[in-house]
Image 1 (cartoon, rainbow, N blue to C red):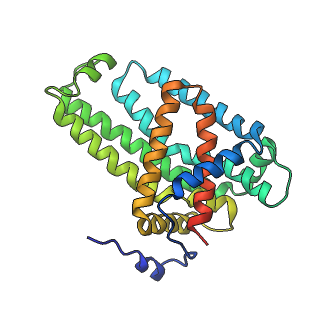
Image 2: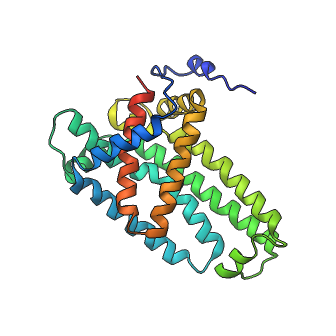
Length: 254
């Protein structure tokens, strides 16, 4: 069934959007890579901060399976908000202003209201997902105290229904959040616009470029997974994806 987003114009005045070429995700990554090394110091600083926070959260949740898996999902939900400062860096450079970590924080704080609203919405989604995962664990595991190793080894046996339900629910939630945040946060860094309009614009470009955006989402998940496995790699991968997302926004929104 085709998804039509024109009805959004009845409720929102949205910026014009574009359809992009099939190879656009790789082009965004190439541009993001060049942008990362145009100001490596402040960009990598964001990568270090996010990596340290991610490592801390995972270490705290390591002995609680549902918290461990939920924390990874929560990271993917909230990571776009953490990249807001990276978008400010690129915006500063494009405007010919000096780029620095401190200045990007100042610019970020200048639009804190709309970003805060979006962050609150994403935080509520993450909390709801954590509660949903806890309920699923309680239902399928019957209140057992399951270790992480036991949880991983049981994903295919009698608990296969749990695995399928949890994975499907996570996929649907992640796709919805990706649709709402694909370009909305860089839009808030670049324009005087409210968060609702930014999210609706993001939803529209995701709908209009479904194949390309599915490829882009898959690349983000793949590279983030590499970052989690290597830990240190996330220091580079996170700002790389942040800069690449800026160029995705520039291509998708006029």
